[in-house]
Image (cartoon, rainbow, N blue to C red; front, side, top):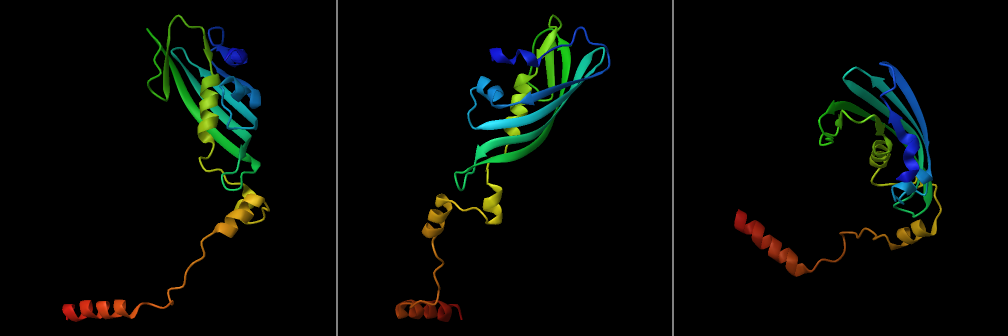
Length: 178
């Protein structure tokens, strides 16, 4: 994560007001985390840091596309994502990130690296089942879909010949009930 220094925010020198930080996230960002499920990414992240005397209120908003593989056809496509995250940073004796929404930093700290929060926000916003839009609307032509269609089990009709012995057994059950 040595390549993520641009995500350090030195909050000690900031005035007590709202500050906007903007980041452009690409494939190299995910490479720094050794995450290889996205082939490419083009995501804009806007971080609003609202500095108060005793805490920092961070509001992340991300919007863009990630290039992923379709789970049905195996074809790569750009998946639209839009997500947000709220994080409150308080100060205390020691570091504590047990709560998802509240981070406690030691009083001795002077900066915060937000890369991990951006990474988690984007990865968790990606759908677990990724289906190409052309698969959904039926316009995709691919070898994988043709093979799946060929292998699909056809519905069997229930009007096929039934062994007459089963009918006799069924009649015994109904006679017993009456």
